[in-house]
Length: 461
Ligand code: ATP
Ligand code: MG
Image (tube, rainbow, N blue to C red; front, side):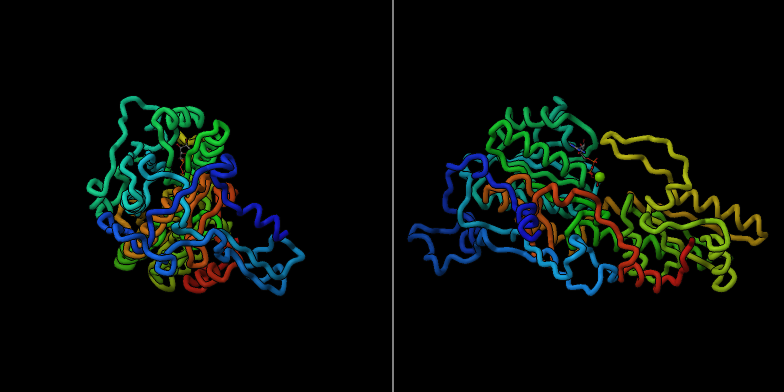
């Protein structure tokens, strides 16, 4: 089982396809990070040559010792095993690189929805590429679409262009959903002579990146495809957190505070805040925990009833009678079974969700009217305000390290990989392992129970 794990988490390398691929000594190391570094007097000695990651370095993905498979939060892969130790590849610069910097054409693309920190990652990919000595860096505009739309030209990128882009949110390159097929994208990569491809996006984008990596291998193209996971929902497997999540929680807390002030200042005020989280309630849970002003937190992972003796509305009545006001924080993917299923899909094939916030607002108004109690219900949807802000300090640092490590991974000759923070260390993982399914809040976890303790809400079933 342990061997199987090692195989699964082995990261693809150029030498898998090109056994004779040439490796040269890296020009990047802690002592050579400046373009003005002068080595006319010879390179530093091996003793001085610090800062490289050994290919055998590993990061501990998971170590759990649990007494029973029902222990809170225990994820049991092998039901007979009570001790799991799993190691993955450590990210960072390698001494041997498989691309000559002067022959690199690197491209960056951002796909899916906006997320705080996109510009920070773009910026650090460009800066790090330049330090390796790469002169040819371009941005593909508006996601994968930029590969097929003849009206969209490549955006030349350099340190000068990206210097200040992290000061605002959004993506310098633009984003989109849908677009050309994998084979069309690879045709275009071939045509443009791109041999390093950095892909910033969520699960859909990564599925695309992995398919592009496989197609490049099939065609015997020497291209490094490296992903940086972008999901504001924090729903990527194995990673401590993804960039933008921390910022989103902080912004969400502001929205919750506004809802609280509105509710608290009104006679029988009820504030409803809808937050992001299509299938995972991490933002709603963390923002509720952080704010301390939420009475009811509803997430997709935990079923609930609105009506009936144990429903949300009954508890709202109790809150109004005892506290005089209440705040509900609901994740967008929660309670979808109450809403009409339109079967609508977006350009990428994702299901279009119904608006649970509006539904709760309407049902709450109806309920209080029926029972003859006045209630002032206000609904806040801060989604687009949250997505568009610039990254906070913690995400800014995360983006910096992810961007740098993406470049190190590509130069090291890896492809079909993605980079993330795992147990506080940075690691490379094969793409299929992080998109196998979406990470979600475990209703039996300590964290969800802490959230319930903080809100004081009962089970709504
Ligand atoms: P977000 O978290 O914002 O939803 P995402 O990366 O999941 O990010 P999507 O719109 O689902 O966003 O997908 C982004 C891009 O990836 C789109 O251009 C889409 O066509 C492409 N894509 C999605 N799924 C696949 C897949 N299975 N194979 C190839 N390409 C895909
Ligand atoms: Mg997605």
